[in-house]
Image 1 (cartoon, rainbow, N blue to C red):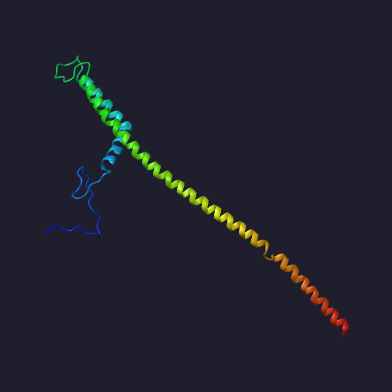
Image 2 (spheres, rainbow, N blue to C red; image 1 turned 60 degrees about the horizontal axis):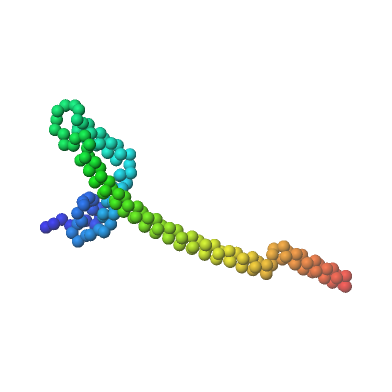
Length: 167
């Protein structure tokens, strides 16, 4: 009996260029192109390519010890290899740039939508503040109420004084 995968434990991560059964990933080649383009743009790649070309030329120099050479002086085979590498690198880099452009476009659309929502929210809040200001104009303020109460108190005191004078 085959051992079932447990749901409480993470699956093992297996990296493979072959898709698993029943699983096709249309983005696999795009991710490969991006990782390749990312590597081709590093100092590590340039250093390794420089070492490769220097060793190639050093081995195939017409001067030096007698040994089998597979590419004599004009280095035609080296030129062919470098041209082949460039012919594959250029489309991979372009594919990676196209994928990045698509991601940037989606990000820009999301940013535009967020900016539009923010603008709408700000306009709503501005209208609400304006309506509150208009409403406050119709509401009695604390100073107004204090003044009215003082007037009432003075009226009551005056009436009380008038009543006392009549008696």
